[in-house]
Image 1 (cartoon, rainbow, N blue to C red):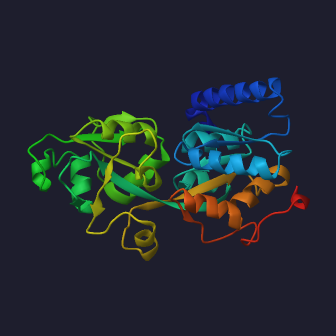
Image 2: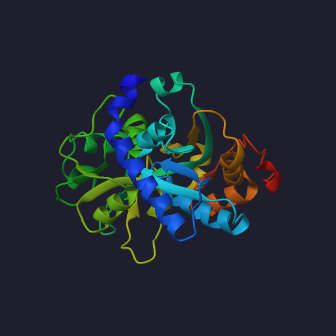
Image 3: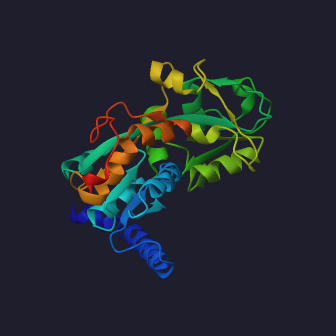
Length: 295
């Protein structure tokens, strides 16, 4: 465990500075208070949690929740170092993390979309073709029924839950080519793909939908199946991962209240409306919602 924490010390320090700044800013403006629940981690999960927090604050104005990114691994380290009460992860816990006895709950499923520029003529790729593109065995769009153009591969950074899920689900024992263009968020991947006719990237399914004020991207079919919630649930579209909340122990008090809200019928409805697939297991609430008596 000592080695595990030391490896991520810099990330934790940076995260703690950001969290401290956020809390101080909140206090200065009468916002966050000393009992603020800090939720930190995956930049893939972060925008959805921020939407949940907006609704949560309307329903429970006395309960403060602060949200900070940093990546799945940084969120787990923040929990281990007691910087955050709840970690956000867009990947499964690895064996070392499981051995630490961390508590986790699935809050939603998220399909991963393979996206290209809207002008790209390619409509479908097989899982093997995606793997060969990202390992640079395929380097030109003409090799997959596209135009004679060099493929620019866009990837997430090491430690990203999105990259970890892509590695496990698509790449297997193959490695993403070191010459891939690396971006530190799904939004950055989306923006780069939308502006590069030769690019390919992978992002959360919900973010592949049209976004106000942003250039569009095109989500490709995979093995003949479109990337939809229905196809993920049926098992026909195989590229998806779980979004997790993680804590050292099962949450109590204010942290439990927020987790319960996320797992409630209302919280799951919000996530579904944002393009995620509601969690099948309502571990804390049984899908019955929450009450103020829980905190």
